[in-house]
Length: 283
Image 1 (cartoon, rainbow, N blue to C red):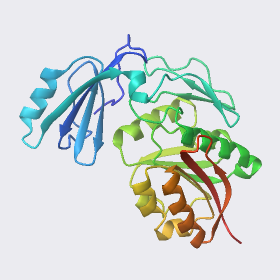
Image 2 (image 1 turned 30 degrees about the vertical axis):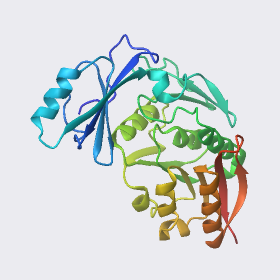
Image 3 (image 1 turned 90 degrees about the vertical axis):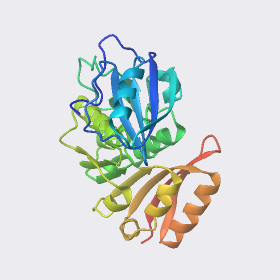
């Protein structure tokens, strides 16, 4: 696929999305010949195809041509509904996140405390409290973040990786298992002029956590996190920011990482629902 994020020039963030839920995997490299195609999202053994216009005939032809595919459902919603709210500029941890559209990237370079972000159809536009809490903790780390190497596991749009780099991290490895997320993150890294400091790659969090880094960032699902913290790679980390945890999940993770020798340097939960931990290894 030459460009998973290709959009028509007249689109805006409020345009409708037509989402086709397909049982079976359509490889990300598969060419989708439709001018309104926006992206291919693979989740377990299912595929979600995104279009900015109805593409019933195209999707029918794809499914008829591959015997392992079955169209399960079709959804229509606005871009803002898919993202969980309008994508507006906001501030978090001293950073300003500015939305832009793929077909109209910013004409000026980003400032030292500014991040340009186009989430495309990937989650991670900064609206969720866990994302903002991670950015706030990164900002509060201040000079200690300078020159650190960072891993961002489950990077999504790349927002946390971009935040770490903007705040002084020297090298950031931004990892996501989903191909479309990596393509989206690469685009955002390039637009922000940070390709020399951030490397987005496709990979599994449980495998990539073994790579050395001064700081681990992980704003991911609990099912993935509980497996990740049980790895030798996590136990060897000196510092981590973990987020994406509901109350009961946060208690379980806190108990486990405490046994591994971490202490909670900071715990944020502004809404009392979602929890974010800044962990440091004792000693």
